[in-house]
Image 1 (tube, rainbow, N blue to C red):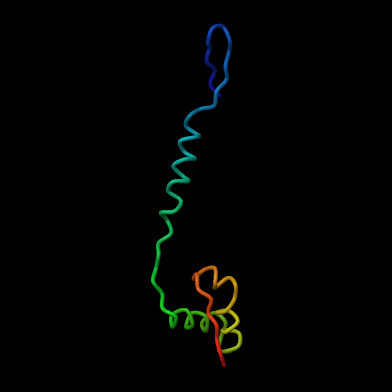
Image 2 (image 1 turned 90 degrees about the vertical axis):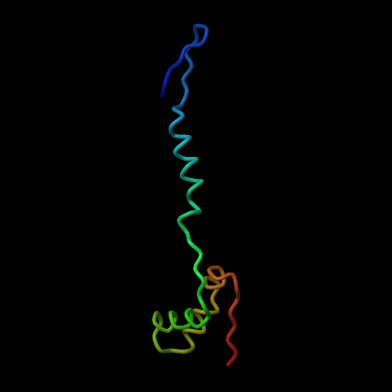
Length: 79
């Protein structure tokens, strides 16, 4: 902390550097994420690679809340 004097009083103030670093970190946080266009077939193939060859588990993964949050779409399998 830096000390300054104003009319005989000692005033402590925080360094400006921390505020600038925080503001720049928050400002640049959104830049690191890039939008990628993925097809439904790519998602299903990735689910098969992850879960294995079981169709029911792939359907559960694809229609889960996490997948809905990630894609912004609710995927429903009818079988």
